[in-house]
Image (cartoon, rainbow, N blue to C red; front, side):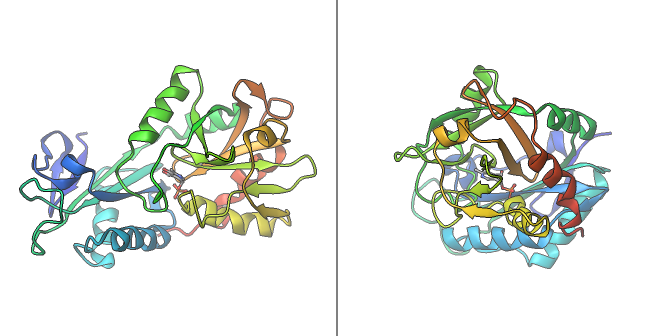
Length: 285
Ligand code: PLP
C-alpha cells in the first residue's frame, strides 16, 4: 500500500507529494510541527497538541492556515487513509512559499501544511522499553526559544547522531550550568534514591512535552512525589532510575548515561509503572 500524504489541500501518494523549492520551511526552517501518537487508530491528546501548535505559530507570527477543527479532520483522514493503528502522525506548517528574502513575505502568503501518518513497530517498542535505552550527554548549543516546536532542529539532529555513534538511543542536552535540559527529541526525568520523580520546569530551556504534561497527572494519581527542578548529569548518574518521555516513545526507561549504569542497570519500577499507566490518563480522539 502506498503511503498517502496531505499537502496543501490534497491527499497524494507520498512518493509524488512535493513542496515548492521556495517554501520557507525548506529554505529557512521557518515553520513549526507536531507529532502525535496514534493508538488503536485514535489520535492521542490531539487537543493538547493543537493548543501547543497554535502557541508555536503565534510565537512565530505565522497564521493558522485553517481552523483547528478542519486540521483535526485532515489528521484523522491521514490516519484512516494510511490505515495506521499504532504509530504517529506528523504535522508541519511553514510560513509558505515566497521569493527568498529573510524578512517575512507579503501578508497574503499562504502557510504550507503537510500531514503524514505512519505505523510504528509496537512490539519492537515494547521490547526496547523492557530493556531500556542508553543516553549520552552533549552541550546544549540551541537557541533560547526551544519552547517553540520549530522545525529548525540542526542541534537536535547533531546530538542524536552523536548518540547513535556512541551506541546510544538518545542525547541529553546539558546547559552551561551543568544542568540537563532535555533530550534531543524527548523530555528527561530521574527518580532519586528516596523515590522522588524529578524533571526540569517547563518555563525555560525545554519544550513543554505533551507526554510530560499528561505524566504529571499520572504521577499524582500514583501518589508519587514530584520535584520540578533542574538536575545535573552527575545527579542523574547516581539516580535510582531515569527515563525519557515523548509522544512516540511514551515513557522509555534509561539504563545507561554516558556509559554508567543507572541504578541496577535495568528499567526501574517507577518508569515501568508510569509507562503502563500512561494511556489511562491520555485522551483519545
Ligand atoms: N523535547 C523535544 C526537544 C522534543 O523534540 C520532544 C518531542 O519530539 C519532546 C521534548 C517531547 O514532547 P512530546 O511529549 O510532546 O512529544
